[in-house]
Amino acid sequence: MGYGVRFLICWGLVLMSAACSERTAQTDGEQVDLIAHGRWVVTMDAGASILEHGAVAVKDGQILAVGPGAEIIAKYTATKTISGDNRVLMPGLINGHTHTSMVLFRGMADDLELMTWLQNYIFPMEGQFVNAEFIEIGAKLACLEMLRGGTTSIVDMYFYPEVSAKVFEACGLRAILGAPMIDFPSPGFSGWDDSFAGGVDFIKNWQGRSSRIIPALAPHAPYTVSPDHLRDVVEMAGALNAPITMHLAEDRAETNMIQQNYGTTPVRHVSELGMLDTPMIAAHMVWPDEEEIAMLAKSKVSAIHNPTSNMKLGAGISPVPAMLAAGIKVGLGTDGAASNNDLDMWEEIRLAALLHKLGSNDPTVMPAITALRLATSLGAEAIGLGDKVGSLEIGKQADMIQVDMSHPHLQPVYDVVSHLVYAVHASDVVTTIIDGQVLMENGIVLTLDATAITAEVTAKADEIRTALSIDSE
Ligand SMILES: [Zn+2]
Image (cartoon, rainbow, N blue to C red; front, side, top):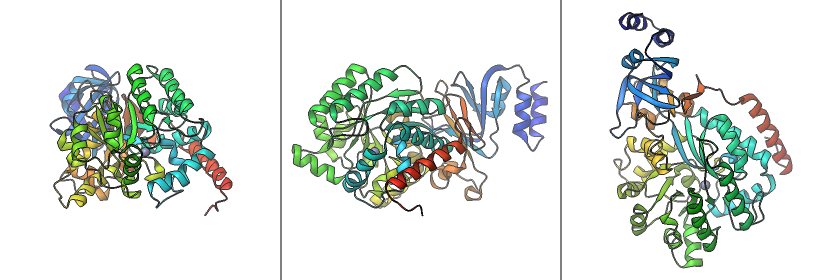
């Protein structure tokens, strides 16, 4: 069948894409694995190109072509085609800082200051309940929530990473992860020596094992890990060629503790330990001063902005516009679900766009496209995967999502980027694709059993509730 005839058939039908997918499978163009269409293809490339009625062709997990839908279906024959009617096709979202399995502590301790929340609630609850089983159930629930909401890459810091790595590998997620290394007893460890050794073992066991799983060193924070131990982390990161992720400059209480103990500020403190000369994904970065922003701009450190967590814990407003202006790579994260209380990146995008306007009394300080970049192209650079993901460009891995724009709260569409930042909900995501693998289609996650996960989560929550003598309602 000639291309002209095929176009007539396709364009002549109301259910255009379903018909097109059948027809395109019968043509003799170059064979590809997948063609995904978009009424709007929001590429997030350097020029923020948006293609109307566009498509992306995928082969062997990578983006082979991006262009007008008609050209793509004329040139390629796909094993699978996904319709783009009323849908945005765009890069998957990048959650640069989270603690996935904390979803099982969702809603247990709210409205507290960071140190009170951590020391009186989170650390004791983790000591009592976190084990390999807890992590497996929590990681599965987190995967379900994240794939459902269009998150395709994460940076995760939580216990038993060998368990969560297996869950992420199986559900199809892309993850950089490490065990929190900390100077005092934590789940599975008695203190620094074994938590550091465990973190290093995890890296040795997982480096090179999966193209989607990147093990990292994850010292908890400069106020929970001694200077000598942080020096050991830097040395080990170099020896293993592994990234570091750590909380840094999160809260005024942290600044006071570092000032009292070391007579300096958190960023200067870790700079003196050599941590700015090694690739590090630093979560929060709420309190760098002007000079520290200049130091960070020249360093190998990126910052992950966590607006919900910072607002909820009253940590402060991170100087994101100033950091971006200085050239620091800034990404976006949810933090754990105990301080958020979900893993919804759309909420972070929206709050990033709003918070800085409020903080500066300047509505021009964080345009919608910049907020969207924090969760896509800039976020990818911030986590060290800028050459692999974060935009829909030829040669990148096919990590992409579709957002259904047909809902009442998304009508009419004048400016698609405006809607993605200010109006879209996580539940509007209908397709999630990672490495070219379709992990969610029409809102159904294909790699996880939602019913079984809900049953496991309910049983685990009952166990926790009973142990803490909490009434169920
Ligand atoms: Zn955190």
